[in-house]
Length: 397
Image (cartoon, rainbow, N blue to C red; front, side, top):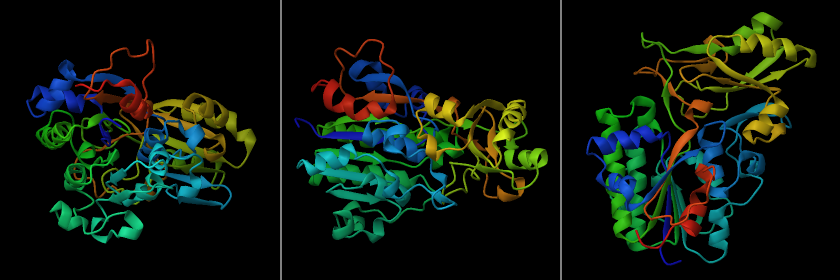
């Protein structure tokens, strides 16, 4: 490889965060790329617009129907329980990262939360660690040791902007010293859940990103920046969350234990979103309930789509056997919950911002090189990042 490739997934980054930071003068390097020094596209992330499905699509180059990871959390029919989908046994294909490492390339992966590390590093040889667990890395497990000494930062709080900043500082240090051929950096969306595009908090965050990717550019890297999903306000004018408690509705319509609502946004880190997103799965105990339930859910204010399993699998490129009998998507300003009593919203210290729906599907795809002849009419996806960086970008910026 003539130039090392760095693919950056900025969690929760819709295009407006970048353009607002550029307009405010907070992101001059990104501003130069958008002005023509690089190439930028509007791209679509995969559905549901959550972290795990999209990170795995980016590092495999395929949609969830192929790689198998269709949520952060799902109902495992084989085990009869709701589980986190963060075990590599759920992954059905190899990653680009693993393939390059097995071919002899030097590969490094740094992610924010440890929930993603084992999936991203599956069968990969090289450096792979999370900023969340940076103080616990070992050469045997992570391909590197003494990370805190190397980086010069303490382990950051999982609920902080520093969790993402650690990733960029570490990425720059690795590029300066180890110079991997291929590097994947994946941040957390803590800031995007807290702050809208153009706010001082958001602009400061993107100024930090801008400084570090500018340094990676100075070091000769080809950089492709994309996101796993966007982010929108999910509250009314009074600041209260717009929530459809779908399990409560189903229990009222059908009776208890006739339907189960699964929220694939669920993970161990729910303080900033209360496990509320714009995408839900419904499992029904009786097939003859389906038509009635579809009609009733579709009539609820704030619902955008109600699809059968087969229709959702086809439209959203999902593995049919890992989704519900129904897939429900809410509108841009609305989220879906299970039962009101199951959601602890006490940790929300600002009005709710979240993701998961079609409204959060559009994301940036930016490269610090020119693409001389982009394929005409191509629908760009965030999982085109490696193809763009490796095959389509020219060597000169």
